[in-house]
Amino acid sequence: MKIAVVTYGTEGDARPLAALCRSLDEAGHASVLLADASTLGAAQRLGVRSQALAGDMQGALANVIALGDRPSAAMNALAAIANTHAAAWLRQTVDAAKGCNAIVCSGLAAFVGLSAAEALRVPAIGAGMFPLTPTAEFASPFLPPARVPRFLRRASHHFVNAMLWRAFRPAVNAARAEVCGLPARRAMWNTHPMLYGVSPSLVPQPADWPDNAMVCGQWIPGAEESWRAPPALSEFLAAGEPPVYVGFGSMTGFDKDRLRAAVIEGVAGRRALLNPGWGGFDTQGLPSNFHVVGDTPHDWLFPRTALVVHHGGSGTSHSAARAGVPSVVVPFAGDQFFWAHRLAEAGVAPTAVAASRLRADDLARGIAFAGDAQVRARAQALGQRMRSEDGLGQAVRAIERSVATA
Image 1 (cartoon, rainbow, N blue to C red):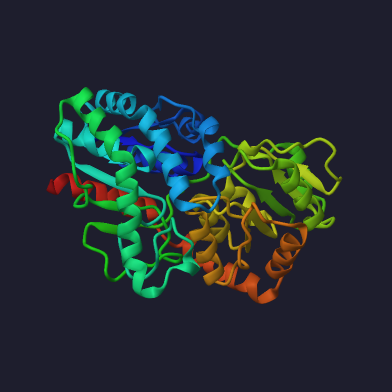
Image 2: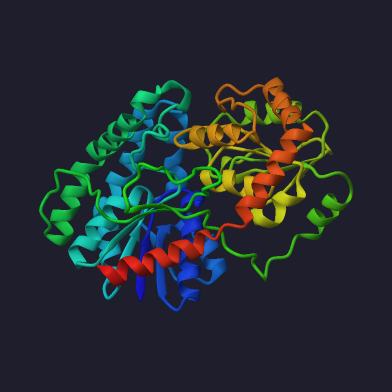
């Protein structure tokens, strides 16, 4: 089979799909991944064929982060990113997917991918790093988990999905007409397969989901054989007790100086690794207990740490849990509050404090929580369960079945 995979978002969106493409290739299929240029590093390291979509996610993301936990405003900002490039993305996807047997679509490019599949008359398969299929078991990941009463959980998914479609629909329909001559759509797609690259240990398959939705397990590539730890990092790790890892991934546009000061004071002299990420933390003049790291495979690094302080992205949340270490989650926007809540429910993270409100004493309390022996035991047990899951294998087999029965 030939499979085109299209997404748009941060590295947390593109990296799992690069792993999925690699698994498809290893299963004898041929894949191509379309995503933002700044997020294609994992695909290139894995030898996955890739193409850059129009746009600058890193530059556009600052506006979203500035809106923090205001769901409707953040959704409109995300839609603005996609709406600006809808026609270009659809044209690129149709061109790349000609001759393909299916299109896997995800992230901000999901509606574009679904339209491209419709134009090319091939199956569309949705992919997600957080659950969007309505359920009564938990609220929409875009809403604060503690603020949605149980009886409104299912309705919250329909509400958020309708808001998303309303924000995307005009630009998507304009692109459909301009690029493919397709008629406008009034309703969202909802019958195509939906595969979620999330762990059933964190989000068990809801009993009320339809047959077309599936929790597969985390999509994480195997260890990169060519990767070697820089000597300075190996020396730092060997020089003392496992350090605290601090990194906020693709988050940008926040008050770097305030958060940097809170991190330094909150860590309180412990050995620490700091990954500046997209946020561009000033690494000059850090205390001697800090060691700065760049892009380092989480599956190699996190098991060598005492705990992971992170933003709550799906990928980092999964990787910390899979490594068997506790988390301290500092969510910025979007589904990060959902993952913070899931880790807290699992007993491997304290209640999260949003990045916009984080103080040094909040971080210090979180680090103390993560050092508790019972918390560490729960984290180790959770990691063991997650490492036994075969998320990529489940997804590849589901894609094969979808194409075979289309």
